[in-house]
Amino acid sequence: MLDFLQLGIRKEINHTLKSLGIVAPTSIQERTIPSILEGKDVIAKAQTGTGKTLAFVLPMIEKIDVHKSDVQALILTPTRELAQQISKEIKRMVENVEGIQVLAVYGGQDVERQLKKLKGARHIVVATPGRLLDHIRRESLDLSTVQMLVLDEADQMLQMGFLPEVDDIIHETLSTRQTMLFSATIPKEIKSLAKKYMVEPEFIEVKAKKVTVEEIKQVVIETTDRRKQATLFHLIEEHRPFLAIIFCRTKIRAKKLHEALIANGYNSDELHGDLSQSKREKAMKRFREAKTQVLVATDVAARGLDVEGVTHVYNYDIPHDVESYVHRIGRTGRAGGDGVAFTLMAPKDLEFLRMIEKGIHQRLEIHVIKGVSIPDREDYQRASREQVKEAKRSDDRKRDGRNATTRSSNRRPNKNRQKGNSGTTIRGRKRTR
Image (tube, rainbow, N blue to C red; front, side):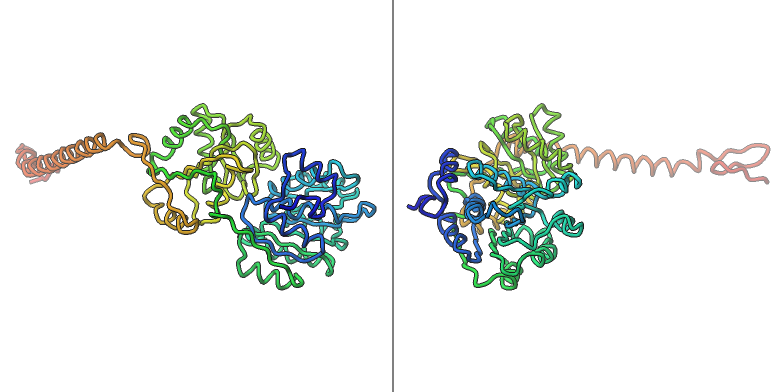
């Protein structure tokens, strides 16, 4: 197996990699780094957790000319969190390299503060499309010197509707630039983008052995929507995770579940689009430092999330596509560690489970926690009998009530008819003779 020095990475960066425990390149790194160093356009298809960030970051650092203060490399990402993560990764890699400057540009930050940072030398810019376009319109950032362009998580940018913005941004860069596209899937829209802007790209695909990481134990818990929260609390109590991420389908559900966890004494935090950028950063910092045990997140907010020590993932809401499932459970069992992923499945979710099993070519274990995820069979039968009896008693009461009303109605005319000197009263009305 080749090492990083043999791939063309300088000894200073190799030293940094070794200090972080990274000795040998992954498959995507081994196949991609030489092509990027040669200046080729690259389309790399690889799942999350395969080491694709370093696959483009390392050769990009090698090609930066520190004697020029212009922006030479641009990395576009779909989310703020991913932009932050990549910029931090680059800063770690250049600790022993003189002069390379990197800046993350994303929404939620103070624009004036970003403008001040942009005035200095910035060789590598990591950005989300929206905020980058804002700077282009303000003329605070010039991309005409960009020689290397990376579109990371391209399929996610497509799903989030960023392709028009990406198109506008690419037009601001050099026509002779080197373009690299990294994605877990390559839909037709991405292929069209590649055909439009790339020159004879080299296609590199790294297939995971099972699509999912082998070290991750995957368990499905059969439950109901009504019992889902109690089931989750039971699982957390039983397994006592060191760090756990709980995935919800929507921001509202994530917020409500986080509040319920706090109310029940759990050390929880939340990560979703309704939070300000400063709150999201604080939540991530607390979670990375293990000051928070549980992080409740939505898919978009957690895209590209890479935290060491995540032992458990809980799919509170089952994902509706295979890619989201793979992404979610890939947050645990990273770097060869062990991990467990629990998926809570209500009866209406069965079709999504079958779709996931088909996509990962694997049958998942389905478990029931008696008395928790579903009622205990004897208790359930006893409760069912009581419900039947109560329903019968209720019907009897209603029937008796209707009969009593009918009898009362039949008697009322005779009871209310009274004779007197002033006339005859019929059903409460006085009629004069």
